[in-house]
Length: 261
Ligand SMILES: O=C(O)c1ccccc1NCC(=O)[C@H](O)[C@H](O)COP(=O)(O)O
Image (cartoon, rainbow, N blue to C red):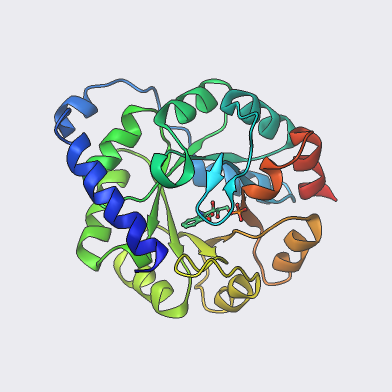
């Protein structure tokens, strides 16, 4: 069984359990405040001539184990914002990433940035839960879903005013996303979630295939300003970066250096 399949099996058990405690109606009754525009924040940075950074709060990962020992999501959120990030991504999956919903709540409360709930979405119920904790955007991993569920999850997010980051890794997934989904915020994951092999050339390749009007995000394995410049040559000006920033002592300075060189 590959890692993505393993993660999805764990997630199905987790969601089945969590659904018992609260219905969609109960979740929707929770006032999490107004949605912060996620794609709009990226577009604003890019329109101003910079890069749009989604800075990720990631304590651990299946590929690297524990990444950050002195982990404080609120401190990280403030540091990323001060360093010039446009948005945050917060891992909430517990079994594989040592994440938690409380990390998202703490991070979002500590800053004014829009926040992506980074988790494995397999059920529209999770979208209602994501909004109830304040998430402004969710992730759809095309490799994880059939067309029908993928559309339902996207619809659940859009009807709550949230943005959807649609993640693809190859041409077939990109074509499915463009055919079946409305969101034109497309993340190209340089990491193959089945093998963990990571290669920036994946974004460069798929960037040639996207139609005008797509906001493309290069994801994973980005560690330096030179990586951002390299992807910018392919027309990609937004990035999702986790590990390389999470390992830094001075997160604000590292974020600024990543963005500005
Ligand atoms: O990061 C992993 O090991 C991983 C394994 C299996 C599924 C997803 C995984 N990561 C999620 C991500 O897409 C990354 O956290 C994100 O793109 C940032 O990547 P990086 O900058 O390389 O931490």
